[in-house]
Image (cartoon, rainbow, N blue to C red; front, side, top):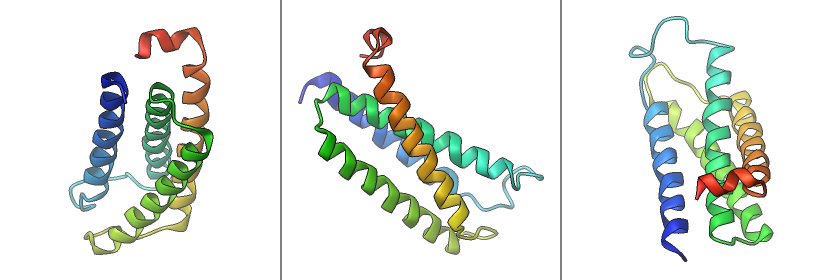
Length: 126
């Protein structure tokens, strides 16, 4: 694996850690009024960025489509675990709708990221 690809995967790990940190914040700390649909928009945005970062790292590391599909399944499982862990955060609760939005976001991000990495824009993303 090249150094560029390694750094790209570290950015995926960093973003995932950032997301986990955000979802571990009790609702009492969040700004008031951050309910539906704003939380759904936040889920969509966070997981779209994660998906795009994964697509970038996969393209830079020459990851096969089969391996990328397994990574997508890993993201789906991680999103489900993230929702489950929210049972233990004061003021938070797990939601199947949130999980579904996470899946849509990560899938959209991976598709968009893969498309970008096949374009000339990818020259700037290395």
